[in-house]
Amino acid sequence: EVQLLESGGGLVQPGGSLRLSCAASGFTFSNDVMSWVRQGPGKGLEWVSQISGSGGSTYYADSVKGRFTISRDNSKNTLYLQMNSLRAEDTAVYYCAKVRNTEVSDYWGQGTLVTVSS
Amino acid sequence: DIQMTQSPSTLSASVGDRVTITCRASQSISSWLAWYQQKPGKAPKLLIYEASTLESGVPSRFSGSGSGTEFTLTISSLQPDDFATYYCQQYNSYLYTFGQGTKLEIK
Image (cartoon, rainbow over all chains, first blue to last red; front, side, top):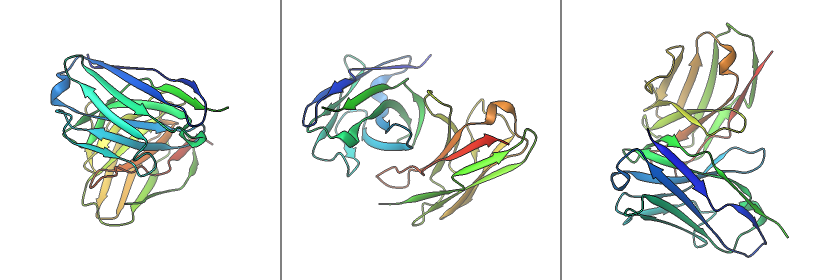
């Protein structure tokens, strides 16, 4: 059974940093593209970032480019999102998702809440 | 970036109704479109990919159609479990943008 478990969310001040983790199990992690999707309070889904199975290719939404870094440790079956220079508008539930064939997100974690506020 | 626009934003319907949600892309995305269902406090669930292919385990009352820039999600006979928010997502090119969502409410 595929399981994705996010952690690392919390309250952070504007300008601060946070690193999210997503522990994966139930599939061959290194074979699959992974992504982060977020959802602000009362808002829709926003695709944030995606990384290839090897970690060699990464993609970012314009809203986070230069501030967020996606990475993975295939030896630990873990996906990361390093978030720097956080802004109030980054407040959201952050989901990690397994991506099938570089296309659709077929499995999702339960999400972790990031709140950026002073 | 490709913009995705859904309509309507809110849809009120009754159990047993047939409903259709539309998603339009700002440029052609061929058939690289997915539909997701999300319930409050839960992660999204993949329903349909490649515009019309039903994900395994999804009831056959859900169907998708379209190509190019215009797509539809149809629920043939609404069930109580279907009241949720629906999102389209294009995966033709990065960024993989979502529509703003359609909330399906009980009339």
